[in-house]
Amino acid sequence: MKVYIKFFFTIFLKSFFYVMLVMASLAFILNLLSELDFFKNLDVETSFPLSLSLLNTPDLIFEMFPFIFLVTTQLFFIKLFDNQEIEILKYSGFKNSRILIILSTFSFIFGLIIIMLFYNLSSNLKNIYLELKSSYASDGKYLAVITKNGLWIKDKIDNRVYIVNSRKVDQHYLVDTFITEFDQNFNVRRNIKSEKIDITNNLWIIQNAKIYNKNEYKISPILKINTNFNYQRIQKLYSNLSSLNLIQLYELKENYKKLNYSVTDVNLQILKIFSLPLFLLLITIFSSIIMLKVKSVESNTFKISLGIFFSVIIYYINNFFHVLGSTEKISLTMSIFVPLVVLTTVNTLMLNNINEK
Image 1 (cartoon, rainbow, N blue to C red):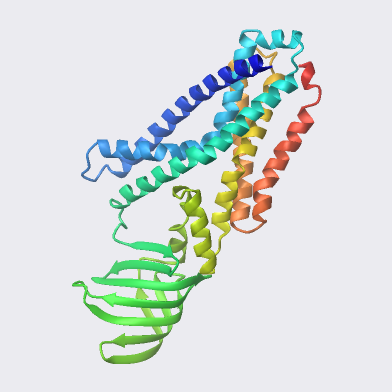
Image 2: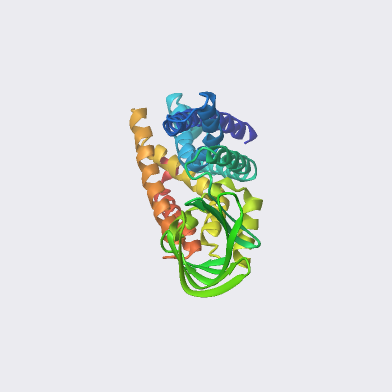
């Protein structure tokens, strides 16, 4: 048995690295083209977009792992088919179901390694990538972060700088907010305090604004200020969770809870990460069954094309349920595990007579 496991592992590993090399190269090239387009009107060295592409590629690969494992499994079986090794195994009494168990175990273990090592590496590189690129972005002079002390925003508009600190975002409103307004020389012009600010649009509507201007104090029922931020933009600032490693995700989750922010997206990201080993296991079983069902077909191109077709379908089904979960149309648990249950059901139905193939 150990000899078979070693034999399978060698073929599977070689197939995996081959697919990884192809997909990493493709991801790098596509990302490089995107970076070159971004920097085409900026004065930067050619090596800079190249470096950014290298930093961002691992994050792209992480999203592609289900597809990578599906194609890896296909190449594994194509190798067995081409050398008639699958028939030799069959005649020696080695059942197809045992091959599925061994391959799915490989994938599950790979999934655990990806979570523990690769994801943390890719997220840290993604964070560096965002920091380097943000200095060249058109809105690089603006800043928004969430800490344990609430939401902080730095904004610059009409020769004025605003430093905003808000306890939380509730629907389309900032709650318990303190704003310090500076002139272009960074001298304090006034301080504004409000319990509720409508941030639906870039024109903020400050309700019952308490205005402190040097030695003066007044209350304005409605005060309007122009900003570069609105509710949608503030929400998007926290959408790039792939730049946070697991420890940072849990820290962010705790900060969100303390500030009464929605933790839906953070929980979804965490669940996606930890469900990956099981997803890869099921993908490997699915790909194995498909290959065994069509092993009589001589065209390897057809087999690979069939795998790509099914991987696209699986991707969109998976993504559809993730969107439903992130928008809270269904529970997060359902958004993650319904696709897994569907894939498990399909695998179970197709396993019939698999040892006879």
